[in-house]
Length: 359
Image 1 (cartoon, helix red, strand yellow):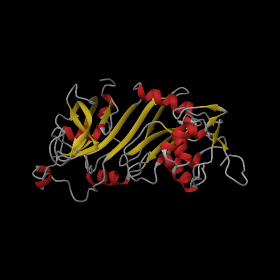
Image 2 (image 1 turned 135 degrees about the vertical axis):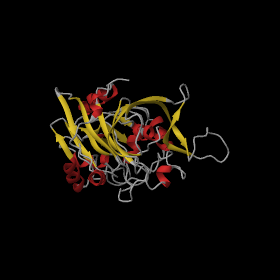
Image 3 (image 1 turned 90 degrees about the vertical axis):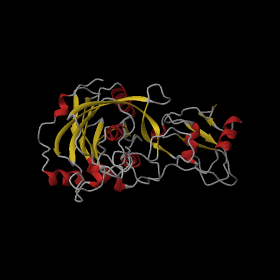
């Protein structure tokens, strides 16, 4: 912790804003430094001028800059603290994931089951692990996009805030070309196509009834197919192609998302009646009476592991410093086992490469 040593009765102290806290709102900074402090008390000490930044009065919404000094009055609770020291093992784990690295960015091979960010009880996640790579100037790598916890594959990380901003703009402007591989129940027809749907959050549990009916529960993390013009509905487009198949049981799909909605590929696969194998959330196409569940000729063999069969296979985009970044991730172990079981050859031609780059 940076600050003045105090003797005797509690006094105000000055704390240094770290590089990692650059751009953070003052109220969130307090939450990080003194998690037991109530928001109402933060509001009070800021409103009454007891908190100063570089000597000036501020608001709770003020965004901090690295190197600023925050005057903090006595808080009468556990001493305000800097973030916990990172685990050295996290640095080794991140290094083991690297597919590509230069002085500006890293491309990681995120494994199945590892969250990208905290939430839902996740104690270990990529964002937290990156703190172990903080450099001597306090600069730490930053995420620029996300993958679902159970999606494996290419995850891009910026080494500086400026590169993170540049990459963020590349993703927002849809200059990043993404290819995913999935293994799905059944074989889609036609073998190549375009999925264009409106998606919104809050799918019903087990059905798609509108909200507000008695007894209905909503899974607020699940996306549902919505109508054009419906509140929160956002357009989503994915091109897909069947690369290989074991008809009628399953198919290996290559998928190219044009938009980047939450759970887009998982929701799209379910919407066309071919949910991704191992997906516990998007499986409406597999009702109890679905032939793919009850017909032995259509059921997925027991040898196929019930982990999500979705891989962020390839990411291609302009490098912020010039040229093109093109990174490919290997199959995760459970998908490798499935490919080997059915003789799928990952070295073959991927027809999704011919799909358009626009809507």
